[in-house]
Amino acid sequence: MPVNTGLQRIFAGMPKGILGVFNVFEGIACNFVSMPNKPGDILFQLIKSLEKSEKRHFKLYITRSSGNEDLKVIKLFDALDKLQQYDEKLVLKKLKDVTKPQLSNLKSHLYKEILAGLRLLKSSESLDLQLNELFDSAHILYKKGLFYQSLRVIDKAKEVAKLNQKFFFLPQLLSLEKRIEALNVTDSFVSRMDELAEESNEVNTKLNMITRLSNLSLQVYGFYIANGHARNEAEEDKVKKFFKQNLPSGSAQQEGFYERLYYYQSYTWFAFIRQDFLLYYRYVQKWVDLFYEKPNMQRTETGHFIKGYHNLLNAHFDLRNYEKFSIDLQKFEEFSHTKRVQSNENFRVQSFVYIASAKINYFTITGQTAAGLKEVPFIEEKLAEYALFLDRHRVMVITYKIAMLYFLSGDYSTCIDYLQKIINDSSGLRTDLQCYARLVHLLAHYEMGNLELMDSLTRSVFRYMSKMKNLTVIEQEIFRFFRGSFRFTSRELIPEFQRFLEKVKHLEKNRFETRSFAYLDIISWLESKVERKPMRVVIEQKFLESKRSRNVVPVLADQ
Figure (cartoon, rainbow, N blue to C red):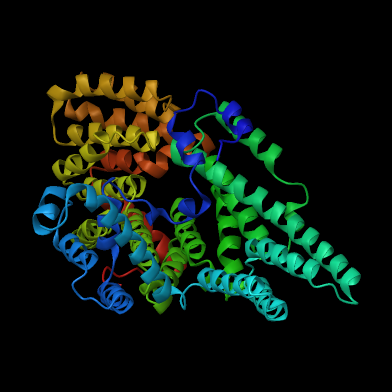
């Protein structure tokens, strides 16, 4: 699918990574676990993704369909299942009666058989698979000349699709229905053809609106993944221009579920890029509320519901909505324990990552670093377990958040270890995270007293952030301070920190500067220097003051 030429023209000169994002299917944008972190043998990845019940079902399926328990495909399946890493030489060694040319065909056959077995197993859990099965049945009946039976199945499929907002299935059902009606002329032929034509036009109009809004949502989200927040008015104007040109006329008045969902998502990403966090919060709340207004869609579009909660918690984090953060995190966790989520590997992994991210955020903005660090071993254990399903972007974000926990706790050495994982990443994603990882890395060395490194590190980080066009007023003030701090004694530094604090504090209300505060609470860091308190204590005091005024219920580490 080609990149939208309008967006390509507007964002000419942006990092090449953004173009790759735009070519990704919408489902991949919604469900981050759909692509493995590292490329490898696709059959091996598929087998490793299977749960015990799925492996057991496949064995029964393949044995029943072949009647021979000693099939080569079963031997290949067992050989691959026992491997920790794919090794073709070792596979051939275990399958002595299979040559290397035969192995390729055997792997292809096994791959298809596993998918066929999973289709049978998962058909009762997936509405999409059920609708495809109904269409297949209607098509078979049509081929047999059993037109009335086929039409009966089509009517059922259309009813299920409309009830669950699955309008993308309707064109193929209507197309088959037209073919049948054209071959089976009755007294009501003319009126039925008019009805079908009108129904087809209505569906096409609806799908056109859904497609345009989903494209807009995906493309604006793609810009954020590649570039992060708008760094200045010029970038914001480009995003505004593209958004205005591609927002369909009348989209705000749409009443359908998907039209509203993609409309809310488009505004969510648009506001987030512009760092308009109040607008971001408003639209992501609408996004989540939509699923409570249409509760049956929580099952139909579980991935979108999960991602909506993730962004709602991010909005609470950005606005320091402590109380609502606690309430919505609890709701999200309760949903993550439902059978719908737990029975699906995709949703289970997705929920884990988003909840882990939210908890770290909460511990960070409340200063509860001890409780947060207790969660880290479990989070890392799960990240390793789910490594096959995780994309680099999400791992990078979690890594940065863990690094910040260690920074707040005063363990600067471990913080640096985590930051190095981001600094050494070559994926080209999230240049904003790359920049702030280097900036926090600089601060960590400063806290450790590695003054002999500060001059070269300051120059290096400044050059990198300048090259990435990631320097705001706050970052420039940070570098200016570090360049001049070496000539001050420890006693003289306190008033310098005070002056630095006064310079940046008034920037809290500046939209293009708020990004810096989201990645690094530089004001709390400076306050800790002026007040001679650990940064964690300063942040915790702010939280406790808010808690006293709002009667917040804290989030427990073992929730």
